[in-house]
Image 1 (cartoon, rainbow, N blue to C red):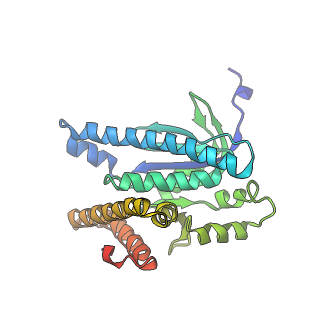
Image 2: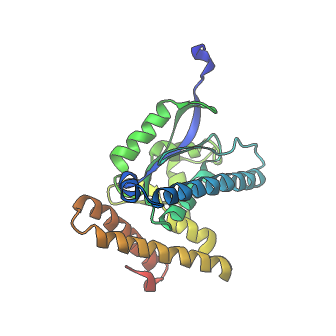
Image 3: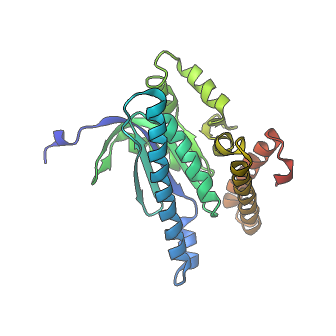
Length: 258
């Protein structure tokens, strides 16, 4: 096949993987645990596909513009999603997946960026994917999904073409979709994003969010307890603890503080 049959296009990209995946597999080898992990990942895939379809429909209805949808591929513990024009829906979807997986004691780390990509049923490649991988492996460090400036800067070219990048940052921070970390990197603020969608709704949806928050607390506490002698791993869950407690204080949910 000729090289011009693989044209690169601009995409908003999400890439993340499961922390401690190899250890989880090793700990459950020979038992049912491996199948349980696979089942959870499969459920997350179905969840993502359904969410992408729903959010894509909402985006189309809200702005009247045709959308290219959110595309998804999963290999082992690696999740890859991309879209040409559903950047805000992708932010919400990733936050939803992150909280869903943590509720099953599966913590993830990754990145969101914007870049050149070729994507079809067989191939995914391009500088955008390489950049996302480097952000995940070298910058994210903790169980967070960092949001690169390239992602934010190009949001203004789509939904808000007349807005400056700083205005987009302020809007995303103000909505709770992003949060600035102590090292100067923004990350997907999944607790606030899900609270905005479910926690401030009717009693039934608020109850679902509180159930998720309790699970979030439970698994952070459990991982802090079992990793007391593993400093590198312990630091990751201490980061989660701090994030969890900041959220609880902000929304006066003090009974759920760790």
